[in-house]
Length: 110
Image (cartoon, rainbow, N blue to C red; front, top):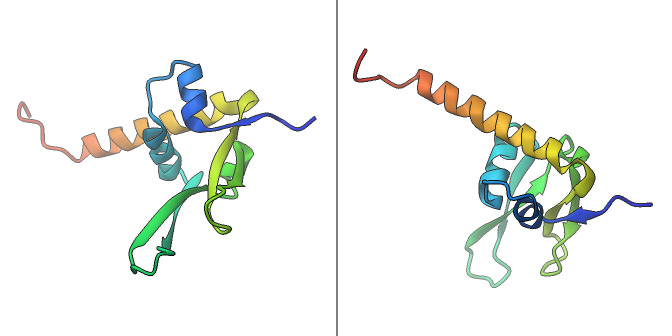
């Protein structure tokens, strides 16, 4: 039987987790599990748009499924049974990023 897939928004909400989907995606981007894919608008305006995609490493957490809007656009869907692993990876990456940033800051009491 194929593992069940859901959107990050659905899984974050269902599990009452404090991140929204964009924050979750940003955490996965920081650690290389997701990437931003740019493309030129199909309207001919020349506007650059983007969508999120799981990387080869991130594919352990889910699949890039066709979005239904354009044949080239995909949207990440996550395996429900291991979503916690993706969430913890994201949180670890955000925490590491925050600590690295904080280490570069000048504190007023120092």
